[in-house]
Length: 113
Length: 112
Image (cartoon, rainbow over all chains, first blue to last red; front, side, top):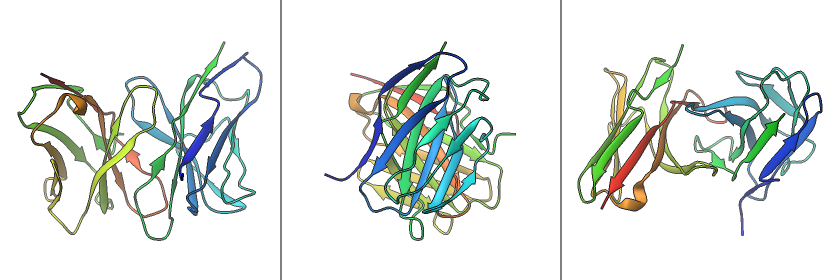
């Protein structure tokens, strides 16, 4: 059963702590992405990776970091430098060289207090 | 400045009627457009897309129209069903494998 998994569904952290969100895909897609959604807003790109060991900043990368050590995994770390970390985080993947369509995971709701 | 705009935050339609969701864009480099459907606290689901070389794409009850000169696209749902009630996002891209630029979404409510 192919797809994208994100864990956990809900995550709570204290201000000042770093937190890592998991994203795994078994679709054999080359590209992976992280988006953030805030209430009443569209999705905004944080980081994306087209190939293992390479990634690019999106529009709102400040306060975030990523790694891409394996094709199927693209974890996102929300650091204490991110000023407004509370949001709904969505991971997506796509077959890079042939498709514009991106396929999304179920999301992680992060709440920082 | 928003590159993809969905100017109607909400739309209410009766079951069986047509739903028309609109989207405008400003970037002439966009060459592919997509519509996603999203329920609260879930990931968006890809619905339908259109390349800039076409002006219409149809998939069952869903049709997307593209007017390049006006930089406008629309999603038609006919007939609308209560299960279509969700937030619909318009998205655009200038190159495969890079960012999708999303609008803020339109909440569609279909009443029976």
